[in-house]
Image 1 (spheres, rainbow, N blue to C red):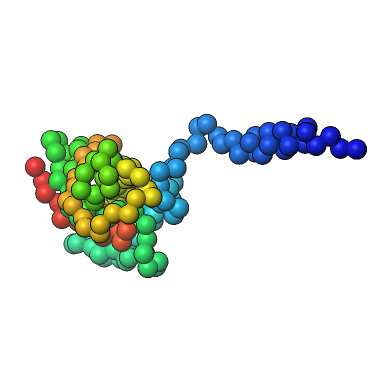
Image 2 (tube, rainbow, N blue to C red):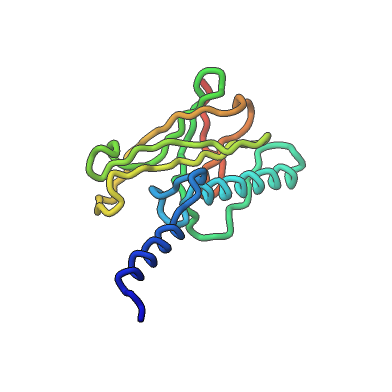
Length: 172
């Protein structure tokens, strides 16, 4: 005869152990499915590869227009412009976002991570929302985020992540 009062705790412990995650793995719990940091980094690397191919196709001369991705609605927050700060190792990127910080209803905090190559920089903007279950008005507000580059920007263009296209750049 099975002693049922022991079965439930043993099964629950086994299930909880199986759900344990790698403590060194990046935490993407705040990002919707399809927008994990790993997926966005891969998308950025693909945008850089398309830009590199456009340079090769143009023979390395003049302005290039990379081919957009094949999917219809790629994830990520597209930046609208960028501005260099100081010696070109810092950038400020502008984009459309929530009206206020994540401490407010319908707000969000933003930070950015660049993915760099010798030819271009792709900007990943990551949002941390006040509450992902909130229903918020569909109006956007101009927001910006500042971040550091590993190398000075130099003559490299800044690309937005969704289509991999260059954005207007202001040099200061």
